[in-house]
Length: 88
Image 1 (tube, rainbow, N blue to C red):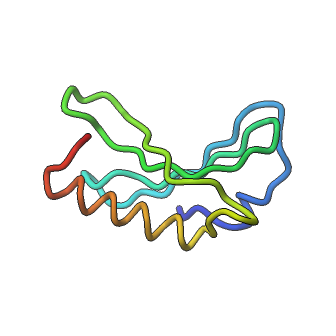
Image 2 (cartoon, rainbow, N blue to C red; image 1 turned 180 degrees about the vertical axis):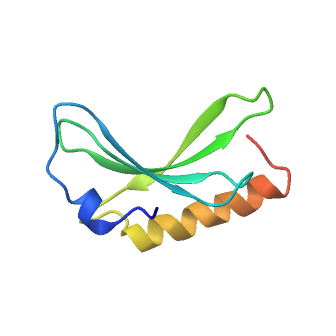
């Protein structure tokens, strides 16, 4: 499932909302996050050398920040680095 503009524009809830888009098995994931305070950010999630999940902040969503499409492009760039063996 893809991270969408509608999801990122959704009203903040009492709990954090996470939206996940797989970049393919072994290539990480593109994440969108909306906090209860209305903060909206994009992340790249990947498995570290120890097998634990890590999140790398891509940037903020919205005016003065990134669009969903721009966040996705940056996540794919990080995914390519991850696939080439660059992990941290």
